[in-house]
Image (cartoon, rainbow, N blue to C red; front, side):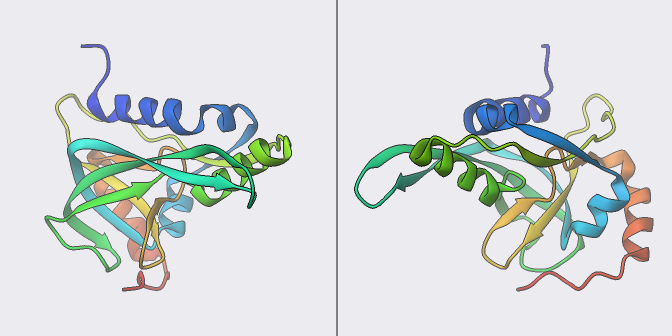
Length: 178
């Protein structure tokens, strides 16, 4: 087996939903401290079955219907909550890719106006998980209705838990909305 399920999920999500957009972006690498600070919801979760759902968003300029925007929603089962509210332990949550609203705008401009914009993509490089470790720490932004990763790759190895807890205790962020 060449790829772990979580890594394969990230590759498939990128290929299905944002590969063209990723080619027109510049990376803005974030540290663990920055990812923790930007998250209003931090959970420990394991991949759900199926691990991903594809959602199509209609794109139109009012008269012409264009190919839909395809959004990958990663599916996770919440095991523990480190920070935030609005999810429950045992619940299956669907999380949008980072900066999903920006990607939708870029896609609409590309297909409707034929404009290709270069964008700044927030990214995070997680540490390698030990073989067999299924649970991950997820860094999420919640508006009370939707969940979205704070950066591309903001899924950390469970072995970083103590460091995340320490950073979380230092953070003075407000709790996630209900």
